[in-house]
View 1: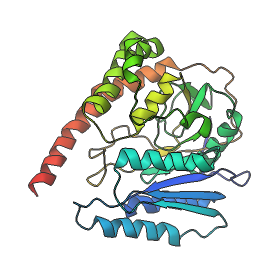
View 2: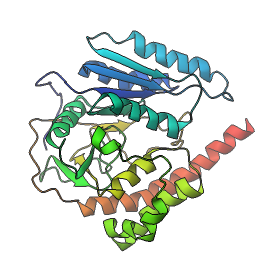
View 3: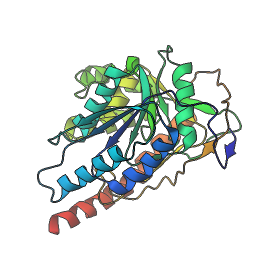
View 4: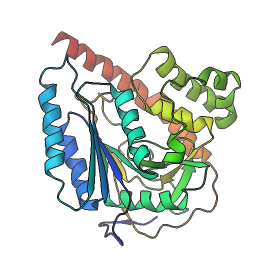
Length: 315
């Protein structure tokens, strides 16, 4: 994969984009500027309602919505899903994605803290079309946790993990999503995490998903989406260099109060993409993904999160 300084679109973008926003105007502006440059023909905007116990949040939510709606200056079809009451991260985001796929067979999804390169949009579009009928592929990821991964071999590779900081998918894949993961106990009893990832990594993945969602009742949707993919042995296409940079770490984040320790930057790349003819999971990438997540970022960020939450409580 060849990195370039500037990406010049080789054709107009034809794929719809779902933009999920909330209360952070500064990150929303940066991400929306990139969407605006890409000029998707259909733009879906979803926003959860303000939380009742947060002072000034209603005004922040209003500012974000008004900014986006007043800056759509290209010819496109616009649909909105603006909630009056707060549903929480898990329900609000997953229902927005379901709404999106009720209207589209495939599409690109960006949250307000996932800053894309321009190449990201065309990367997603090309692979969405290429693998639209391939039931083995569930996700097109724009984020590469390693920043750069074997670019001399392929322009993209396959992973059972991937990432949802800037991604794309199909209605055919999202239909398996279940926020409650009603059959996870049966999946665990059959050792299916271990069957998919191997004994060591399977136990780690099982522990993360089960403890986070079932035991701690974490208000999220991404682990459930991961589980839907794992249950169906669904793989992700991951770019050899990251096309997304997460800019949402900080005090006003929902789940990422600490620092982004991955140090991943967005890149522009050269097209056309080289086809990867071997649809096989890159186990080395997945192993690194597991190890780094478990022993570095999560431990350090959890400590920072505790301090941040404590500071909020004593203010």
